[in-house]
Length: 130
Image (cartoon, rainbow, N blue to C red):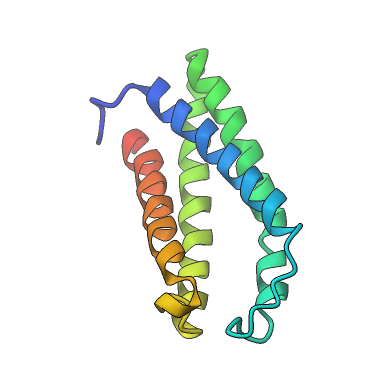
């Protein structure tokens, strides 16, 4: 669908996204999260994402390497990664909406651009190789 985008650009985006995920969790896991506006259960909800995000980041690195070397399996694995990222983003978006976490006083200034970026990256991975 987006055949004009070089697969190596998608591979670079995947590497960047995987590093972003790793950086996020390294920072998040070292923070206490005691802000009074955080909803009950927030920490438990977020901790559940460590595992699928780690799998996603690992698969994105593998698919990026496969794309860089021209292996067709990289395209299929990139589609899987795009679907995983979109699914995880939808879950986070639903949680944030249900708990009012897009409000300015609740970190919304950080949440909205991050969610939009993840949706764009997901769609890039999916639409490039559909």
